[in-house]
Image: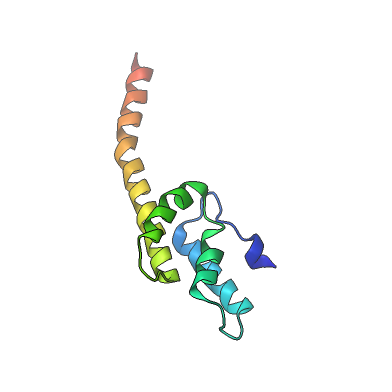
Length: 102
């Protein structure tokens, strides 16, 4: 089953991964009988490890979590990681330029 094997690609952003998982769940759950826990599991089981470790403690603090909440939390984590990376890149880039100049 494609849903069971689906994992987030190394360069795949959360929005694309979540969109694919939602489509696969709709395809598998034709009777719309899946619980929100099953949907959350299907989404989270294929997440990149760094997202998963940051995500679970936050999700457990939520009352009655939904798949939308799970996706939103992981998107925030992804955005924070991207902002942190972007804020540190100029420092590394300028250090490498200085090293090359010496």
